Image (cartoon, rainbow, N blue to C red; front, side):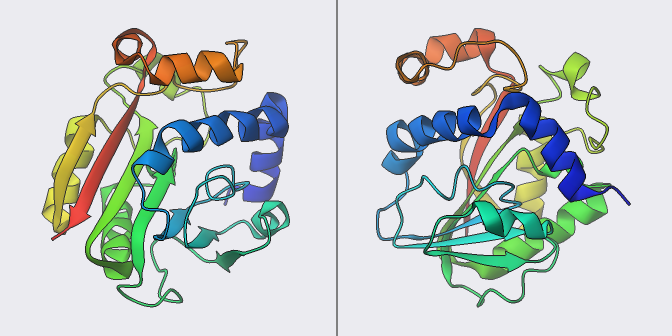
Length: 218
């Protein structure tokens, strides 16, 4: 079994945790905060070092990860559950307004495991609640995708949408190209540049290699 704590440390230390946190602060403030009600209960699945959940504005914030080290990086007020994403039964059913997952589903071993995650998310969402997923789109990131040792499940914006529908979700928005594939590079990440990128969706068609899918519980 992969040592998650060591893998996270080795990979994300290369990028710089401060750099990642700064990027996510801008993404939340100028994109996701505008799509998530300020009083919502938000759960981040596979929260990693908490870059999203620490920065999103929400009435209640919950983080789930199998890596116990995640807790050290979460801000006060963020509730943490050390648990597998295939079974988040410690979270009260139908409590959550929004579940968010970034760069997670590709780490699942197969479609059966992915189905379990989708059903688990469905269980904690209230009726009408949303599941927002960001991840590498194999259609546009096929060359870089396999450069990561723990990538197993290749998904496109079309295949994940189909899986969501089969699990009982309704697709609300499906963006094939959103963010670049990774921050493990020298691409400038100044706040002004990220804000400009978010405000200019035409650029996504050239630089974006991750899908952004929003689905709701029927």
